[in-house]
Length: 281
Image (tube, rainbow, N blue to C red):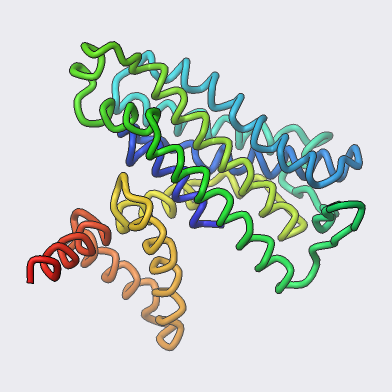
């Protein structure tokens, strides 16, 4: 789940160069959309899953139109402010969302394939279901970033003025990247809701956004392979540090600090330099 969240955030931060703090908001919007549709209206999981991505993408579209009127740094602050506003909105609309008490009773996913009903219930079921989602999402994102749109994203990141002189509509591609990123975040929010079976306003917190931001920075901005390995490394490290629970958070911070200092370009840059060095030999 974090792998796809980080890959979607990489579209905005890595390929277009926009710093956003709204990824957790889109994740939460997707979770609540799917959860509410299932609990309140009995909507099938597949329908709720796709609508979660669409609703998150629509929210991102309007946020982008508003935030892109400002400068780079103000864009980040506006996305943070809107994420907090959405969290407050969900927390206070008690009659619909359950407020601070959250939304319980979310059902397990059920898939109808060729008139065969498949219920995702056990941890192993969720593992294979998430594995399938990872493969599908990575293929879509790979095709996107290596297409004409992906090249336009990179040109906007590298030199916006030069890109605009070649007829590239900068705002159009920034909005497009923001919306696509939110769509995948909404999908992952839907998966999370039907995996945990309970959601609360806390999922809108900054922890989710900071986590995917760290994954992208450790893996390497604008690289799919770096972010892929970065998402696993970020979660392997805490597991390895379980043997020292009293120093776990301190050691975790030290490891992240060392990554930033000695691998400023991320894992991908180190991998590429190593491969190019071995190729010359």
